[in-house]
Each structure stands twice: as C-alpha cells, then as structure tokens.
Length: 314
Image (cartoon, rainbow, N blue to C red; front, top):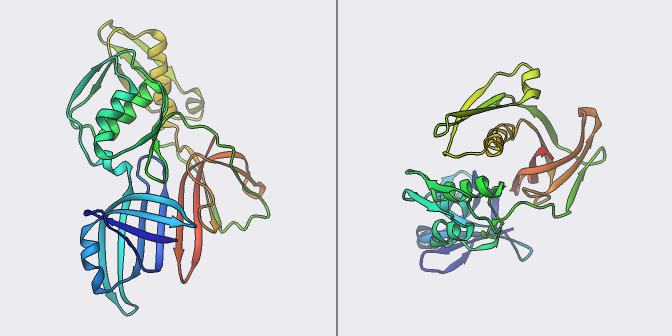
C-alpha cells in the first residue's frame, strides 16, 4: 500500500515506502481512521506542515480518503521516522457544530445540502425521505448528528461513508460478497463476547401534550434477569404506533453490540463494514452469518499483515 498527502495548497505528495500502517474501517461513527509510519528526511518538513488530506492506495484503488489530524517526527535507535494520523471524511461533520434549527416538512436532500455539502462532502446515493413532523436540530449538535438523527428518525437507517470519502444516505443493502471462515481458515485469534451493559429492558414513552404513555419491554432480557429502564418524551400528537416504534427502536439500538465475535486473520482488506461473513467455528459454538461492523487492518515490515474483523449477528 502507498500513502499520499494532499496539502492545503492542493499539491499531492507520495510518501516514502511505509514501514508500518493501520487502517480501521467503521463506515460511520466513530470515524474510519489511519496511521502510517515512514522514513523521514528534512525535505518533507513543509509538505507535512501543510498536510490537510490523505489517501491510501492499493493496486490503483483508493482504500481510504481522509483528513490529517496530526504528524510526528521521531528519532530513535532505529532511525528517523515520521508518522501521520487522521480520520475519514465523517470527521468533517463531527468536528463542525450546527446552529439550532427547526425544519417543517424537511427532506433528506435539504438536510444533506445544509449540513454536509458545505464541508466538501459529496453524496452519491440519497434516499427519498421526507419528515412527517417538525424536525429540530438542538443547540450543540454536530453536523453529523443533524444528518444522522434525521436519517434514523424518518428513514430508519444510519448514513455512512464509502472508503473514497463519499456519503451514502441510503439504507444498507447486502452486496452479496461473502467471506467464509471455517475450520480450514488460518484464524490467528477469535473472541466471542456478550455484553449486557446498557441493554434496555423497558422504555416508557410519554407524550406530554396529550398526557399519554406507552411501555415497550424487552422480554428476552427481562427473562435473563436484566433491569434497565429509560423514560422517553416524544413531540406532541404522537400516535400509538409511532410511540411504540420509538420505544422499540430505542431497545433495538441498545442491543447493538450485545453479542460480538472478533476474529484476527492473516492478510489485509478481506472484509469491510456492512459486508457479510459466514462463520463456522464449531469448537467455539459459533455458526451462522454475521455482519462486519469494524475491520482493523495492520501492516509492518517485521510482522507482516493482519486484519481483525468485528462481527455482529444479522
């Protein structure tokens, strides 16, 4: 893999051969991130000082496009090296705060135009979503929160970024690509984890305008001894169906990451967030199809290449 930095005056520099690098894909928030280390010489001082953007390229394909957060230059017994680190383009929306706004009948196109486009974000796919109620962006909200909350509330999906930095404001679809991990796969490590912390057992939804309430329960967690309740206030004139959906949505959201499988394999770029993985590891009692939520790709000249994928059930 090669690394490129793009300076604030729009010049592109290809970095020297990389000694170590790490690229973590999430597709959403927290951001994709990267760290690259290479041999340094004084001629690179000015390009690094002006570095604003970064691109990772493998076989002619852009594997990540992002911003530069920091660089360091270090002198050790191994020599003089520099390290550049940063995040994917979601950082542009996370780092910028929206002013308080109230929308009436807003469309997703309007939200993208106001909260993403001004920060150089190109949206290549956009769902036809229109709010059926007043949508409010609270004071202190990031531009990402303004966009993501709208998509989740009225579209039922979370927006995400492609590796080339382009925004996808559409529901996730199964692209059909499958990584198969079985008894013959050279698994370096595998961790099965169940985490019940924060998983809701009950949501009390209250419409203060109409003075009505509705309770949604997570019976599965209640039967397993869980006890975690939240009270949620909804805008006025909420229908029973909308109130129930809001509570059910909060419970489902709390269950994300409840059961995960983390597998380390040799190689890089084997799977990406949103893709499906078929796992058949009978010794650990793991069998079925999973969704990739994170892929952590590592390389060093001494240790070679590994990828660690974090999976959740589908």
